[in-house]
Image (tube, rainbow, N blue to C red; front, side, top):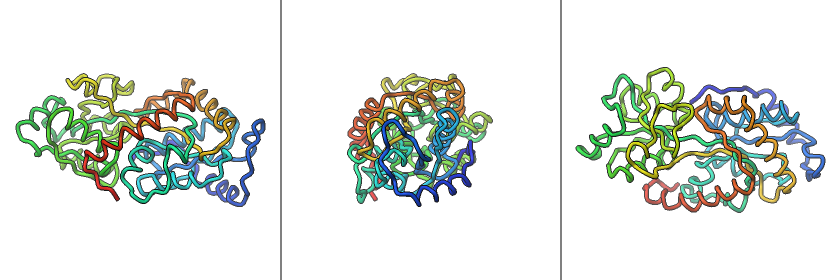
Amino acid sequence: MIRTLFSFTALALALGSAAQAQTPAPAAAGAYPSKPIRLIVPFPPGGGTDILSRLVATKLTESAKWTVVADNRAGAGGTIGIGEAVKAAPTGYDLVMGQKDNLVIGPWLYKNLTWDPTKDLTAVAHVAYTPVVIATSASNSKYKTLADVVSAAKASPGTITYGSPGNGTSIHLAGHLFEQAAGIKLSHIPYKGSNPALMDALAGNVDLLVSSLPSAMGQIKSGKLRPLAVTSAKRSSSLPEVPTVAEAGFKGFDVSTWYGVFAPAGTPPAVVNTVNAEINKLLATADMKAAIHAQGAEPEAMSAAQFGTLLKTDYAKWKGIVESSGAKIE
């Protein structure tokens, strides 16, 4: 999907085996951490969540002198990795990088989840957010602006196709919300991940691509993909020349995907505050900001309480969005 920034496979295996052999002990407020920390990544290597997770793990290891190991536990739209974190001992040694898809949207898509993110997880530290980008092939598409798309869609409803990384993802739902805001009808083509959708958009097999910005950034920078708009309230600092959907005439439009670190419910507040403080320190550094911006994301620090409020607010808000989209409940 995107090239992985860092590779920790051997280290993850070695430390993962050692961690499993130990019985977790409660973290003492003044001694945390006294052993390696596992950061569960609920998606495969190479994607936006994986990249940010490995960036956080690497920088915490460098700056705080902690041993933080990224551990990929992919499957079921990220809900498998979240489920593993929920069941972990609340000691601060098993954390998870969550994001909007698996914590806010997934629970309304999958019937059989046994956990509630607002009750079974503790928000620790917000890391970054990224807008969704609406783009098209630079060589195979006639659309130059978002207004061109809207005009064509109103003239021929349902004939313009857009690809997304999957049914019910935040990316798909961003496209659905854009249809509603513009009063148009597009045809959604779901793919099994961002890269297949991207390849078909480049080839002209779908008219539009709706994608996270990190997933599309490489092809945008190469000139092969033409960005028409970003869905956040503000322009992306990575693509300052690309207008927002709101600037294109749809005031108030604001859809973005956030990423952040969570711990099992019951994790001691002292541990939560320690991790929050260290991650917020990282987000204030120039090199961390540059690394996040390079992936098309925007760093943003929050207190643990602020991040918990964001989770609860979005969890309630997106229930209705998922239901109105007609996304399949599995």
